[in-house]
Image (cartoon, rainbow, N blue to C red; front, side):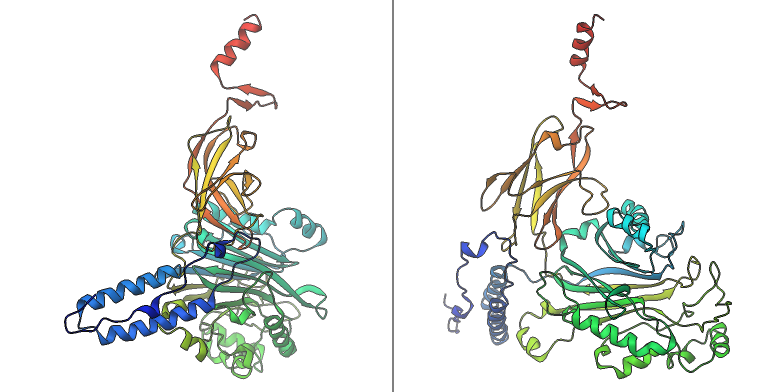
Length: 536
């Protein structure tokens, strides 16, 4: 195409090799991220952006270049998101001292104020009751704390996405229903540091996940106690950072995630100052006088592996050690000095120069910011000798995943007396597996395993094509009482619910179980026939 007074711009450098059907193989292995292809695309887009500056005065050519850029990103499978998205995160850490949950957690979870604006809750507990009887029971069933938190959060539209337990350490994540398909690649693990790594009374439990394409990692730790064990605390945490691995991970280490949260009963104390001085300063709310002697603050200035970890100002009372059911510091014979043992820190990934050069022309892939809104303790809770601490964050991110990787729907009207069909389609390069399944859930379900029944996408498949697949669910598996349901696609390779359908109704079956376990017919004609045959 010729332009007035302008030679035709050669756009051949933008052309990419055609997408092969072989690249979309359905296998049990996680597909490649194609980082090499993205790097080439970035170079080409960078060249294109330079050309745009040179021809900005020519509106027609400028418009053609803009279309070419959009086409380039569509080829890569992603369109440049138009704006940043706020994602509100509420982190809770609490050493519960083997106690059962209190009756009311409204203030801890902001249920009286801004809970509707929280997108994800991350809850790290320490010293959950792990006596042998309790622990064995919790292995078979959800522990009392998990059940209690699901009772609180599920009615508000939150779903428990992950849970990891190591003796007294427990880490839970809850996310709003609308975000579920965009939280992917969920992995959990733990590492023991007690008794030289053989006992799990100390250590860490970790969960990592991709949130709208950004890799987040959460570490709930319980480090060694006592004033003199600062070096052991630091050694244990450094070992966790170096040794923690996840099954199937594509990221080398914890600090390679885009954003890391480190929290728990870290057990750092206030050095040098005596107990009477500390209590006097605390009573006068002059907390800043203690900051320079806080062992963690000192270590952050000296230890290289702690560089980049950030924390909000400690403008609340030290959270340890209190008499039970009070806000009075330790009056026992031990008379522990008050300390900020319970902490929440975070660290954004440091982008190397090579990564910065690679990101030219596609800066949107690296945009993620964390803003701390509030960092505080909650003095009203007295079930243990620690007070809980919360951090409320706004994550500003440019979403890299714009659509759920799986779309699915219930075909036709569902009735408990008949087999039913499910149609679904997957996005390009979706890492399908023979272990994937589609679950039937009641509306308001509490966690991933809260399904009524499920169908294997391969074993129960009745048709397959490039654009749409179908599986069936037997009538024997459909609840007879009917109700409002939805379908969720579980991806084995990503360990997440990759797609959720709209809700739909299932009509009750003709035969419902009676109060005594016998079968009661709901069909009037059947009832009449029964009566006639019985002589009525």
